[in-house]
Image (tube, rainbow, N blue to C red):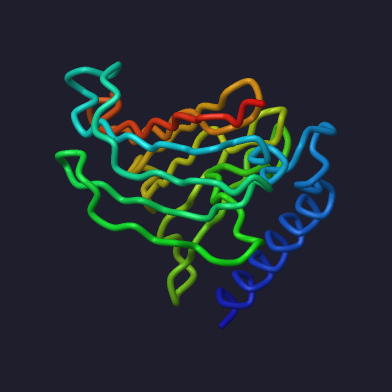
Length: 191
């Protein structure tokens, strides 16, 4: 009973610290740089490629797997999915005027390492997720560790200078090398 009360208090303190950090960092005003939606206003299309054998050739762009197309107002209006041969597998028309591009790693916290710990029913650590953010507020790394603090999963993220996502990198934790790289390529509206 005493152990459960201590764990409840610990969870309460962690929650307060997390909320305090979250309230101090408004994701729309990080370093006075634009929010994710503002970045997409002049994008015509975003093509997403997957390199599934990145360990063998980390610079290989891989296969086109998905494409987002945008309206002239910067909202997503079409999603196209491709098969492994580059043929259209499915096409989705997206209606409405307020569908933002689902940008991975949209701004959250600046120069912060956020650790989220999940406990089991007895209060023992099941796993923890460690999220690292750069000075611009973008997520740059996610590590998931088990109860013994062994690394289970690692993802890193790279961005273009304008803040748009460039790469999602999924790591082989045993070899400490990329096993899959998702590349983002953008076409911009030109006047």
